[in-house]
Length: 431
Image (cartoon, rainbow, N blue to C red; front, side, top):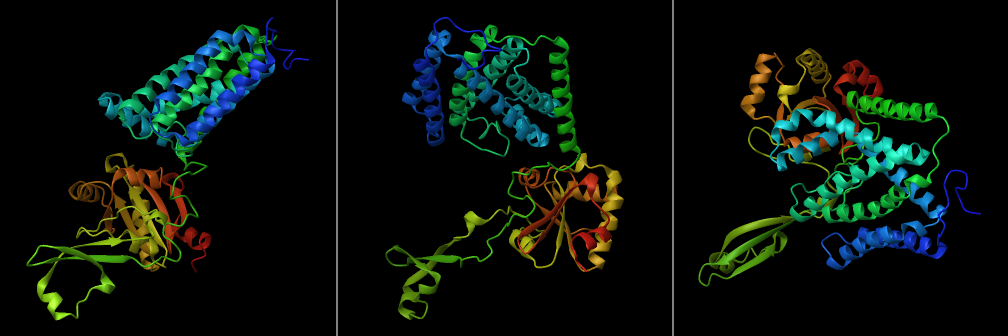
């Protein structure tokens, strides 16, 4: 008995062996995408041939494989929609990158609404595919969406206007060529569903179909709105709560010194502990040229530069302090709600009076920040500078509050949820 008998019409000349070959080939191609990060003509040709064969033999795919294709597409669109919808600001930042790359800066004010719409569209189409709702129009809209994504990712793969398309948010980062390959595999499944769209029997009740569509769209936009007005309920970034920013038992940093022979110009590099500094003859003939350091802990670090007024990077010192450190992050001073300034002032006074570190990390130029500080009567916080990309990745709130201690992220708060400092005393058991 064929699967899906109750809601799929049967092709007259279906082939079980051809159907399973189609499915297994796509699974194999998906595996190779994971290991093929750059351009490969043979692999690309294989993906295109796979689509061509599907178009030629689509009528011979049996109902079980057709259903599996529909379910896989639905699950993938739902997953992609959720990992982006959980962080609409992250998707907005990625869309802004595209606007800058395509020299359409005029469209930047529309980036957030476009993020919400695209995320909701992807999730909705996935849910409707999974529930087999209005398959005629859902398959057409899905195909149009994937055509747009495929053309965009082809351009990305060829010219790299942005380093990562953000197709799966921060949950899964793959190369631009992998993204394009991935879309070609998705297209093979989607073409099958589209070409066979009339084989899916419609729901008997239109009310059920339309009600499902409305509920899915409304529910997901509500979900996105919650994540916009609070921190994302799932954090995929390095600065999520509980993550260690520095290695717990760091290995010693190695310092290498290069000396140049004053007579011959020959250069020699020494590990600092091996430098023959007690050899007077060597020290007379060789002069220091330059040095470098080799930090074996670098791959275990999730810190980014935090520059003080003297131009020194003090990020390691800030996050490794054994005292609690409260970091207010401001990556756009022009977008800060000035009504939040009294709260920040009160928090700073209470925290510093209690003996805890409180500072501001900002990407604004010093003169811009000092003007904001003066105009809004912000108290004299210690100010450190960083780039806006790092700050946006650390916390999706402007301003936002991050609590760190001994190299670990203890807590993070959206500006809508920053509690009074006395509540911190209880929550973090500081007393």
